[in-house]
Image (cartoon, helix red, strand yellow):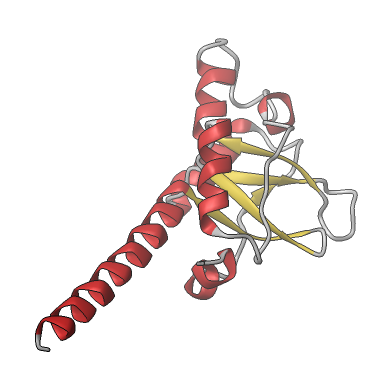
Length: 150
């Protein structure tokens, strides 16, 4: 079983975020600058930055471009996804994949003690699952070749 904690071994660090009153144009600029597809939205009036939502490139396209809204006056709070599915470091990556598939999402915040400590992507999860499967295949191949020598 591969856990989110193992997946995060190389990924922990800065969590990029915006606040609900951030203009959409600024959020999109931050996503472009950092090469990411989503930002967590944290409430600014909470000392630890309580999770208020998540905003993705898809939210921006649908909530601004498709609706013909002004990205300078439309805020992240106007278009963000408020029902945020999340995971914990102890969760199995297969469960994360099932959650992401079931809810048609590509970004999953990782919560620890009511704080966002990371965001994992569908790509992160699939890469980790494929690596674990490759390790199993190699192990079985070594076992079978060892068996054949007797």
